[in-house]
Amino acid sequence: MTLWITLRNLRTRALATLITLLAVALATATALLVPLLSRQLERGAQDAAQVFDLLITAKGSASQAVLSSLFYLDVPIGNLPYSEYARLKNDPRTRRAVMLGFGDNFRGLPVVGTETGFFDQRLKPGDPPYFHLAQGRLFGKVYDAVLGQTAQRQSGLKLGDTFKSAHGLEEYHEPGVETEEHDATYTVVGILAPTGGPVDRAVLTPIQSLWQIHGQLTEASRGVTAVLYTARALNDLYSVAQQTNAQPRAQAVFPGQVFAQLRGFLLQGQAAYAGLSLLMLLLSGLTVWLSVHSAGLERARSVALLRALGGGRGTVFGVVLLETALVVVLGLLLGVALSLGLGVLAGGVLGQRLGFSLPAPTLDAALLLRVAWLLPLGLLAALPPALGAARAEPTRHLA
Image 1 (spheres, rainbow, N blue to C red):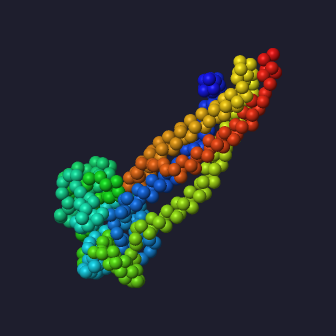
Image 2 (tube, rainbow, N blue to C red):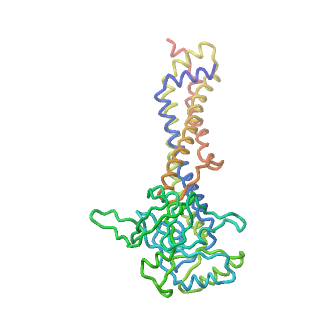
Image 3 (tube, rainbow, N blue to C red):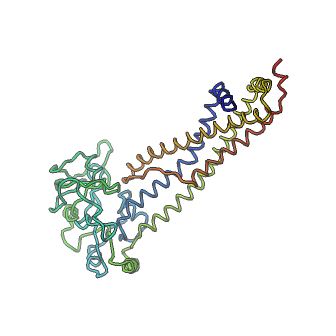
C-alpha cells in the first residue's frame, strides 16, 4: 500500500518529480564525468606508448619529447646527429634502436621517417610484433610509404596510389597560402592494421626519403629527431639512460615517468573540480529538500485522507521518505548512465583529436561513493517534511 501511494503521489506531481530527478542526475553526471575522462586519457596514453621502453631525443622538455615523438602532438625539440644513433645502434647493450625523423606532413597527417626495425617493436621479447600489416608490404624503396589505419581512411589513399608530402608538421589552411609541396612522389605500398595508438594516423616512410628531400645527403649532415630504444636487460636500459643524460646534447626519457608527472597535474585539476562537484551535489540536495517541502503543502489533504482511512503516523512518514528515496535513486542511476554515455562520446572525440584510442569509461567503488552519499543527504532533507506530515492533524484538512 505504501509503495502504491508513493507512486501515485509522484505521478500526481510529475513535473516537480521530473525536475528534481534531472537535478540529481545532472549533479551526479557532473561529479563523475571529469574523473572518468581523466582515467580514460591516462589509460589510453599508457596503452599507446607501452611498446616503447626508452625515448632518446635532443636536450629539452621530457613531456615535449614524448608528445612530439610518440604522439605526434607537439613540435620536436630538435635533431640529434646521426652519429648519436650509430653509437646507440652499435652498443653491445642494445637490443633494438630505431630512428625517427619528422618535419613533413600529408594533408595534416604526420610523415614519420623511420626504418623497418620500427615494425619489429614488441611488448615483450617473446611476443609477436606490435605492428602488422592489413594490406600490402613494408616499405623497401626510399619513397615507399606505409599508412596507419586512420591515415588511410582520412586520406582516401589505396595501395599503389601516389602523393607528395608538404613541409611542416601541419597542413596550411589559411586562404591564399599555398602548401609547400616537395617534388618527390611517394607510393603507398602497405596499410597497417589498427592498433588504437598514434601510429594509426601516421604516414611511415624510410627516413632516407626525408634526408633526400631536405638535402641531407652526407652522413655528417643527417639528423635524427628521436631514437626508440630497447636494451637487452633492465640494468642495461638504466645504464644507457644514465650515460645518455650525462651528455650535453641528448636526453633519455622514460615515458612512464612522464605519464606519472602528467597524472599529478591531472589530479591537481581533479581536486579543484571536486569542489565544483561538491557544490553541485549540495545544490541537488537543496533541490530535493525544496521539492519535498513544496510537495508537503500539496500532500496535506491526501495525508489527511490516508490517516482517516486508518493509516498510522509511521505509514505517512514512510510514504514521504520513500518518495524522496525513489527520486534520488532514479536520479543517481540516470546520472551514472549519463556520465558513462558522455564519457564514451567525449572519449571518442578526444581520441580522434589526440590520435590514439581511449578505452571505455569504467566506474569503481570510489567513484560511486563520491555520489552515493546524495541518497542519505536527500533522506536527511526529507526528514523535517516527513515528521511534519506524520504529526499533522487530519481533521484540519477534511473539513
